[in-house]
Amino acid sequence: MNVDVPLKVLVCDPNSVTREALVEQLGKHEAVMSFDSSENITIAESRLREDDINTIFIDPLVPNFDAAANFILSVRKSFPEIVFVLYMDVATAEANRQSFYQGERQRFSHYYTLDKALPVAAFPDEVDFVIRTCQEDLSWRLSSASLKRLTEQRLRGGKVEQAPAGALQEVQKLVAQVTASRRQMPERNTVFLSYCFAETEYAEGLIPLLEERGFRVITGKRSNTYISRAIIDRIRNCEYFVCLMTRDKEKTDGTFTTSPWLLEEKGVALALGKQIVLMIEEGVDDFGGLQGDWQRIHFGPKGFLKAALEAARQLASYSGRGQEEDAA
Image (cartoon, rainbow, N blue to C red; front, side):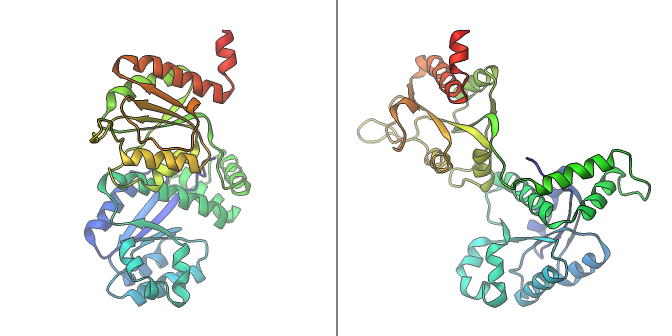
């Protein structure tokens, strides 16, 4: 279930490059109702007094770390409904863990984070993930009155006038979301397709085939050495997982490895208990264990269509549609 709480964001970051990169992404996101930015704590405090803020992205690793930490802790006490995201170099914080999480700052270990060291390609998806997480958190923090006020402001575009008749229904919907379970159930008949983005031919053949059979296919870009939380979240929210394990590097015995991040994504799917189909290119032998032979489909260039049809049948059997399709 999507939690449609509009965000009013303040970004506090002394680094103009990373600040503007985040502001650019916020400006593109449909869930962000308004946003502002500041380069220091003093300006952030002023913005907080002047504006209605419910989400703050802040880099606590600023020259005056104590001031930033005190600002965060003070705001959390005065405005417990505000969600904080630590927008920082996570590795630097971890390298100074003993001092960074000292005393009251132990609470920071439970805060949401957005890593400044993210690969550029992963940044938009990771921002989207954090925004959705903040929306979910706010749905529990905000009272129904606050949700009503936010909804009316969004529907009237911030103008002071009577809310449209549909506002009440929208509020009721939001309040219902507040009382619903936080954990989303996987969306029915959705498939996360894991594949190497340098090998698009196979994927371009498989995706339409699965869509024709009623499955919605979800993919996600990643860098070669990083699987973002956004990718993990997409795998979690899909009902099934298909991995196209194509050749990567040739070994001395003539067999091939597959891309290591495909193995990592498969590991995530296994850990989340997903029903899995592995499509393995001939010659690949390092696809890992923990799955039965009936989940593996091997293919070569001339046999890919047959393998794709078998994968679709396997997914149909998972969904309970296999017998119906066979009877048809």
